Structure formats: C-alpha cells, structure tokens
Picture: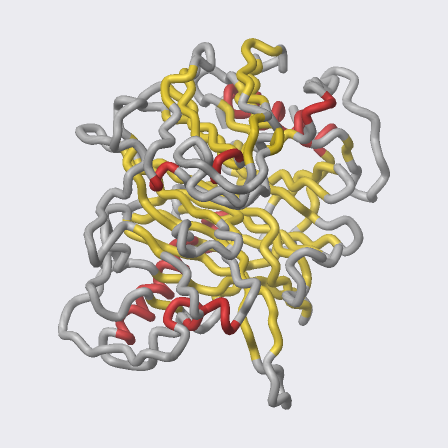
Length: 473
C-alpha cells in the first residue's frame, strides 16, 4: 500500500468514525502518536452525506446539506460552495425552474445525493435533492460552477430526497466523451426516472448534451425503467443502490430490493428484501446485457441477506493463495446484516463476507449459456411481471458476451454465497473499505456505535486482527 493511499485511508477512517475497539471489545484511547483529526461543519446545516478524495492531491471533497466543502489532507477548509436552500416543492415535475408549478414553494434544503470526481475534465459532479436531482459541475481547484444543466428532462436524475439513494460510476475513454452510469431509487415515480441509465459526460460542462442518454430513439434507450405493473404486485417496490464500480468490460451495481416469496408450507406470499448484483456491459447502449444475480452469506446456519455496504479491492498474494485466484483478481468485500424481512430495521447481527468477482461472472455466464439453449425463463419477475421462456439461439457465449435483443433483461435464480470472514452479534457493521498491504488483504469495518475494526481475512481461521489504534503503523 502506498504512503499516499495509507494516508487517505487513515484520514477517511478518522473523519467518519471516532472510536476504537480492542480485540476483546474494550474501548481504547487514541494512539498518543496519532491523534484523531476532526472537522466540524456548520451545525445548522445538518449531516454530511458523501465524501470523495482526490487520489492525485489528497484533497477531500465533502458533500453536505446545502454545502460542498473542499478540505486539505489535514481537514482544513480550503473552499466552500453553497448549494441551497432554495424555493422548491418535490411534487413539481418538471421543476418550477422549467415551468410554472401549482404546488406551494417553500425554502428547501439541498441534500447532497451524489459526489463524483471527473478526473479527465478536472471537475466535481455534485448532485442534490433540489429540483428533482439537479447536478452541478464544479471546478476542482476552487469549486467554481462550470455548469448546471437544467433545461431538459434528462437533467433531472432522481426524485428521491435521501442521501443514499443515488450511485454513479464514470467510464472513461481516451478519445471520446466519458459516460456516467447512474442508478437511483425512483420513489414511486418510474414514469419520470429510469432506475439505471447511462449518460453522456461532455467535455463542455454547459453543452446541451450533458447528461443526455448515450442512446435514445423511439423504441430503445440506454436505460432500464421499472414497469408500472410492478407496483400493482409490490406497491412500495423500489431498488436501493448500495455500491457501484467498473471492472473489465462491465459496470456493476449492488442493490437491495423487495420481492414476494411463498414460505414453505404457506399458500400466501410475503414481502422480503433480497440483495442482488447487477451487471451491464460498458458498451451496451441498448442495455441488452442487463443481468442480476442474488447474493448473500451464511455462517453456522445463520443467513445474512441484507446488504449494508461493499467495497472492491484486490486479493493480494496471501489471500489469493487461499482462494485459488491471482493477486490482482478483484475481490468484493461486503457487509450483510442478518435476515431479509425488513429493510429499514436491520438486526444487529452482521457478517463481513468476500466474493471473488470472477466466480460471480462465471455464474452469470453459465446462466446466459443455459438461457440461450432455451432452458428456463428470464427469472426477472419485477421487470417482466410474468415468466417469459428463454429463447434458443446458436451462438457462443464467452466471458465478454453483451447480450442481444432477446433473452434480456435476465435474472439468475440461484444465490451466489460469499465467504464469511468475520461476524458481529451486538454492534452491526455498517461500512467497509479494503486494501492490500505487504501482500496482505486488509479491511476496515465501521459499526453502528461508531467503532472501527481492522480485519485480516484468514480463510483457514478468520479473525479480528487488531484495533485500528494498535496496528496502524
């Protein structure tokens, strides 16, 4: 792990969590040689929502309610940019800045919902809750507003006012405009907002094409919409996006979503929540490559199914040997809480689990191959409402297959199970970050009570290796 990476890992840990824990659960004072560095914003503005670190400079960008902060690596304020409040009403669609709205307008806070660094164009993408999800493009150096597209319906990215409702992944190119894959909960408004779409990131921050769909005609577009029929089956249906990343030729999102199941021995269905990984090809403008696969974890007969957090890292030489993969293979570190009945009231029992991304991709490839042999149905009830048989086609399905205008979108019915490396029964884990240090794959997990634990995956006998304050050197 590079000194710069170590510095920002420690910094994020200090910023987000303010307590440590020993292997026996006793609270310990901060290490005398490494005092905690803190930053406190304007208390009247509410919570911090998102944080990104410029990997080139170490500068920190902090998305808050009505503010964007630029901080130095030692948490000194360099620049602030005000994003709200402003007169608005969430029922105004299109927003009142486009056309007159009959709903009463009141001073409304702007909750930061997405914060991304666009390295290629040296700008920050800051999306908020005002005006159905308007995004600002800010210059990284001084947070000067480069653009704020708002005059087309494509510019309104999300009507949900929760800070954790939107996730974006930038796909960069050397010789053309980049793409932004954006995923959002739709909050009962599927007619306005696609749940996943790919958008243009133009070089000119004020260009008309900024955030336009990569492709859009009368019949096909670079998006997935939740059908209105789905809400007749599950009235409060939505897809909640927990994490997103790109790897190889694909973009991935990890989600939490409701579904109806029939319990064993019961003739009625009940609603539960399930965690799923969604995969799309980077170059698929028609979204024919959409596949989702359920993921979960189990230890000693206990099911952990409610995804709380995730982070993509490398295996590292030591963990790679145990898993039978290469040191540079992608590994997903995930935190699940116990059960799957209620999204908003997760139980305190939780597990840190790892997935080998290649194994998930192999499972998806097997499913694609079987479906294109005409076996089974599409298994994506929320999108198709009813079962649709797979169609047979004579073609080769390799690791990079990106779908056709048949057998899509596709669901995998059998769950991919992660490998549990650490469980916590009383203080639910809520966040995770991981990295490779001296060939060891290490993870930091944050807990509900504000503790930070450092875990070293040991496949033969997983264990909590030490508290952050005792093994940070």
